[in-house]
Length: 176
Image 1: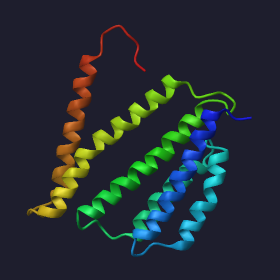
Image 2: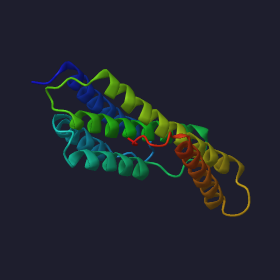
Image 3: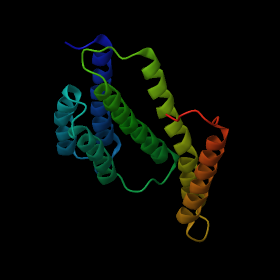
């Protein structure tokens, strides 16, 4: 017997997975209906057992399906779709990880759901500047190896933020 919150979490995983498969076929010029059917067929197994290795396979196959069905993003619309797919894959991963962290019959505590949501939002917020740099690089196309330059700048910014956050942590308290 599953708790209501576990059921909602698992249904969310299934809905996002099916939506990503359909989105990839609908907007990708090279989208494969067969690959989408494989992803839709794999989804119930992940919903039933989110702690299995099939979850990693599902997320990886979603990424591979997206990459195979699209050429490199050329305009802002392509980049927005790429961000949407990445956030969807993150949602599948986080939902499965949270569902697997508790027994199926245990309700998901509100504090846990809030903490996991915050962590997911932090990942998205930290990825958006890199995404914006890549969008700018695609539109502006300056001379030189811009991908390496912007990637290095983004990595330095994230490293600086991590260092700054580590210095804000009170001493003597355990982390995590």
